[in-house]
Length: 279
Image (cartoon, rainbow, N blue to C red; front, side, top):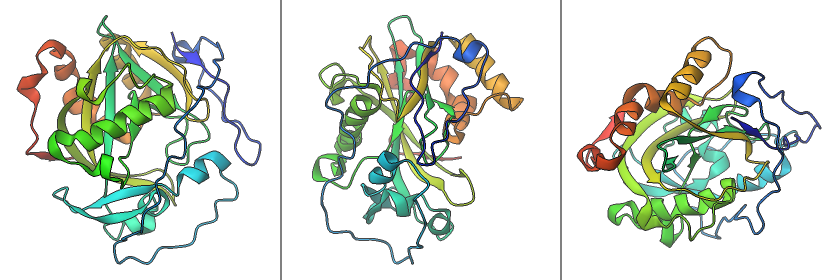
């Protein structure tokens, strides 16, 4: 059953509607996590790609989410080689994406010991893909030495631990980088609206563990552990435009997710750190 948090309010005071029905039945507000890792952008000299960065008015957007646009993402080429760094804002503008700007990202799929997958619905305050249902946690490693380290994707896994705490309030000691399994990578591009979008090489990360949750309502509107059957029902609703799901989650769910889900105790046979799946 979906647990719905206090809905985030945009700068203009608007609240997006929460979809009704079986996917958002339970309205049990939760306190936001103490000591969140919001806005942990580290100071760094920016080494941007040679792209003209457009000016975009963000006055109408959520203040907390706008602050996060200053985080420094890792710029990469199509083979996932680091070529520089730039702000989250510049990495997510369609004008730059259309010129080839590409950054590193990750998607976490967290299962409990009952083999149920934790999904979230992104808050109305999110700048890209607000109100969309998606996998457990989706974000970016930052251009900082701890998250740039590439050996067995340890930097990306550290970033995933950080964001699981920031978004879902999962204590960092409950999910360590060593407990996060890196399976493979996908490369995709998608527009959120006329201004914002995504262009990422996305590291697919799996975790199976029972954890404590204390989500941040500025990040997450609702959340739920689902069975395979329940996820298929959600995907069916999305195909009928009854709910919205993020494009990366749709691609992963339709291509890989269920066979991985069937083999949670034997994921090693799906590990492929050489190939980048072009979606």
